[in-house]
Length: 438
Image (cartoon, rainbow, N blue to C red; front, top):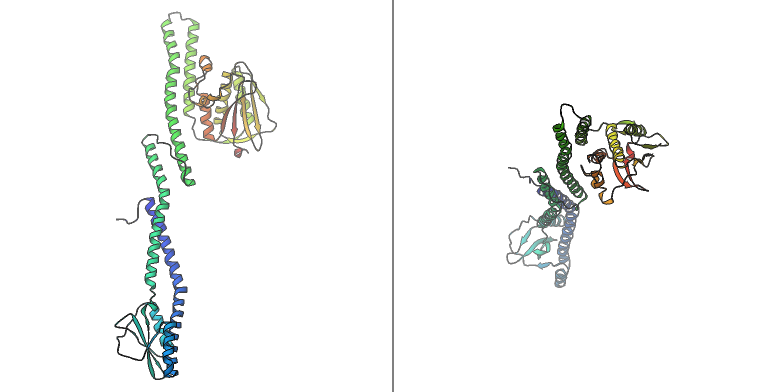
């Protein structure tokens, strides 16, 4: 059976409590050894000097002055002087102060003196010889009533109790949010989406809660995207499949060439849709960054788009722009954005600009299409989300291009913004981190 607590609360509380207790013991021990004990020895020595000096004063003064001296000793030092010496039982004391007092008495008197305790009350008596005569001087037991062990026990016990309480309260502030985080992680492990956690408390706990909330949101979005992808593929494949079925029924011994061309277009559309779906699924491939020239990548993608009949105008960058990135991912991202601009820009010219300096590296792809409403700027990045104008157009695409582009950008630390263009149209801006600039 292990005595070590299993919970974070218990372990932290025990660790803090033991550490503070050790500190208290060391501090008290140091204070007792270097302060309390020297002060006790000095106090015991002074009191022993008073007692021995009083005995010698009584011996040297005439009898008629003894009464006055006894009265002064009682008032000033609490000493009782008696000439009636009777047999008392010797008393041994184990309190440290009495040991110091006994040692000081013996040293002051030059011989070992006996300490007695009164049988009728709490009076301590000392027989002090002075020039052949014995004097018995007494004082109240409370005069030497210090008890360091009890003080030490109370100090350590009270400090231990206070330390444990403070430790429990302080660790609870960390343990409670950690318990919430643990419960949320278990919910995610079971496939459920937990409620959003409060992002407060210590900075580390708040950052962890924020990361868990973001992870839960990403998982939920991934599940929704999976559902949307399945529904989108089913919807978009239904139309060409229907046309193919009708075309097959209409085929005869001498098929119409136009009908055959339509079948081929439908098959090509289905192949493109499946290809885009596979591209979206591969959006999180491993990163393989290499050194490349951004302007050469842009020129290559523009040349591919021109061969398809699009009008692309490149605004040349003044200086070379070497960069360290995954070329395949960057080419796919730019190709999707350029194709999206060509599909929605009509016959207008697509302007592509590269800005490259120490403060900013960005690529802008601008079209003169109908534009995107402000409230749809975020929604168009969802899989299969298309605006009404795109749905009605045969060239509207599958709705996966921007989703693929955003997935690639998130993976590689890039940023995509869709901005309204002056004079109409849309500007897609890709911002690259300057830390990867060579």
